[in-house]
Image (cartoon, rainbow, N blue to C red):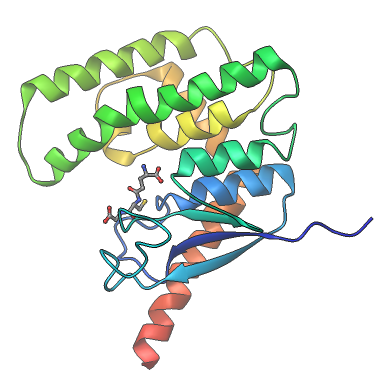
Length: 216
Ligand SMILES: N[C@@H](CCC(=O)N[C@@H](CS)C(=O)NCC(=O)O)C(=O)O
């Protein structure tokens, strides 16, 4: 059998140190690593990002995923597309598939919808009690869920865990409060060889970009 053509994961050509290890191309890298899907990395310039790739990503963000004629933005959409290629990401049964997609939305739209604004407010040292209590509520609810199960869907790793762990592992969120079940979950998920490889590769990619910038 001919090996599959690699998919292309698009990211920035460089980012400052702060977001390294968290740029959302890691979600697509991690999924490909879990499933053994061949991939290559391509980049758009960080400088001018607001307008230089609007044809690929109408908000000027990353990541994007390209697979032949298919070109997608939104990390969740990219993950669901990759999930169609491997049972290691989305199990083949209809019920499990529906539940994985449900949890991807929960990660992105119920958790990240509050974690991100809260983190941005922390960066700007603004205290907005309504957002903090919204966050606290959501994190406490996830703590309940994670206290009762090892995996979000079925009896093994799926994209539901990938997205939930990636949303919850943000340093400021982890340091805020005490949630042993969530912490154990994040530790288990980020100890997975596929995550570690994806993380190390992203760090190396941006370190190499530092060198390239210095040489310019
Ligand atoms: N909902 C989008 C969010 C993408 C996003 O926030 N990407 C960040 C990098 S991790 C970015 O491009 N930030 C620059 C910006 O928003 O201008 C997704 O999940 O793909």
